[in-house]
Length: 275
Image (tube, rainbow, N blue to C red; front, side, top):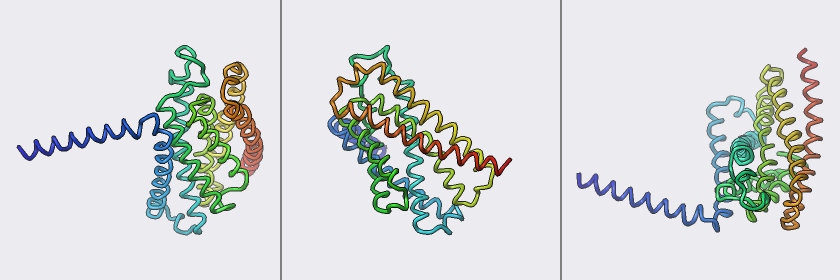
């Protein structure tokens, strides 16, 4: 009994120390920008390694891939997990959280932030840094100049919003577009596995079309409309933050339209072969 009691007391002491550490350092406002970015980078590396481990044992096609294909396979697993995480969190902050609700606002919308929202953005910054590093290191195997531009602009914009707390609402609205990433990655997986003529490939192509239309076209239109009606608040941000809210989404929007054109052409070809 005495041993069990001492063990329980030791565990409780350790738990209290861990909670204090998390509260005073990991989730402390002054440390969040750094711990969250580091967390994002560590999480990305863990997902990459787990993908490598799991795929080796459970996917026969993985073994037959070239070294660079296996790298891209694991890299896409990393981007898929990030996309699910950030699109879910962004949707929560934009549509359900009271943080940016105009009925609960205290101050200007463009300056609203919280420890949770800042930490979430920091995790995303950590991912963008890791992924951009891999893209540049293995260039152009994991993507061309458009991927470098996309990740660089995204990383800078998200990083600025995380560090300053400005424009987080619009940052989350843009990050909802990551909702399309899992479908894009699944398309690559199906193609690599030799399932390009399968029904799954066709269904995935249709899903990409609608997801892209909703998250990267219509949502961007809604965001630009929202910025227009709240321009008096946007202009009160720092000039660089103002630039990021007005210019970066516009550039990404143009890129989205260009990619959407390719998606439509690809879907037409797939449907023509199937029907």
